[in-house]
Image (cartoon, rainbow, N blue to C red; front, top):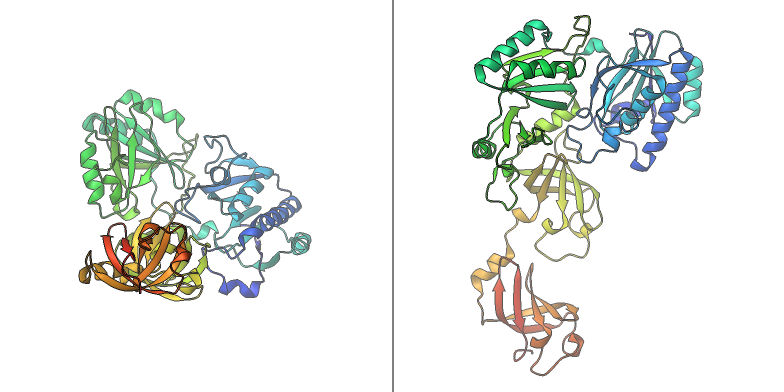
Length: 504
């Protein structure tokens, strides 16, 4: 690697150890400005080093900052840099400096894409998970350092980049050479069909159903250079068996689905709810020509029929795919260890007005992992979120749902509290008269609290024996009343009350 290495950050070096790994500390409204400054700084380093072209190393579409980006910005930040099919974005590809700086910008913005950029042993650019950028050069870059500081960034020399390829963990990789393709022909003949997984960049896959030696020969020329190839047993038309396996699954698996036209739908992490066949619109669709398969995602669970890495055109295997676990991998493992119904603790971190609050779970990787919606905060009526879940409050909550797409767990405080409605229904019945306090007046009646966390509605027609046009003619907020229970609906959390002959 280049001997002169510099670390660029938007914060002072003294704050380095306090920075959360894997979690950006740059305010959202400042990210575009910081990204522009980092690009300008990197351009200065590159031009001073005489670099006009960069090679892409170990590219990822996602999985470095986040293992699953549901709503990426411009195809993970690659829009405008590469064609729609991402031709040219692969390991070993060479791109102009301008495209390399576009990649750097996408990485600083955490749009999804990640890779290392380098020019042999002369120059490199690395982006880390602590809003840090590393620049390596074969010569001192004093002028570039001065310009970087003038851009409002902090820079200092370091011994080496933590993303130096020397730190890479790699598996023993077999070349997908002629012998590999000969074995693949044999597997197709033996099994009737196989499923070829083409991992063309990190966290991005293409799938190929192969049913004959002719199809094997046809697929080979179109594969992405240096792609990782994995061969699995073929797809099945038994969708009910796939649904049952998804419902009872206890490991991370990818759900691969082929449409009747032969194309493949978006690959998803298989979640138990997807296996339900009684839904109006089942998540796993059955029908003529539809096939599916489950492919293990965790490296320790993967037992393919065959695996290899495409060598370069001269037959030499140069790709060195790193297997280092990223922060995103660790968070995925944390999510996989959680179950609906688990009780967790955490601290309220930020709020979203009337929607809910983000919660940092009590785990080193739990920052922002929990979300507590307003309806799940309390059985009792409250006027402000700050009354129940102010920022900084420690909470204990139950997990209601695990959302792999958003990398988030939905929490509930109510689930750990007795349901006041059921408690009330156990001791009261329709026709009974009960005391209460008027809490709110609305055009169609008045709400009356009959117990902590339980409110009933007195409709306008039930406020008095005579006609009433406005609730204020009969009651006021805070009035103590005696009401008759007309109806109780536990499922809808509704109680109908009457004051017609029972007002004090």
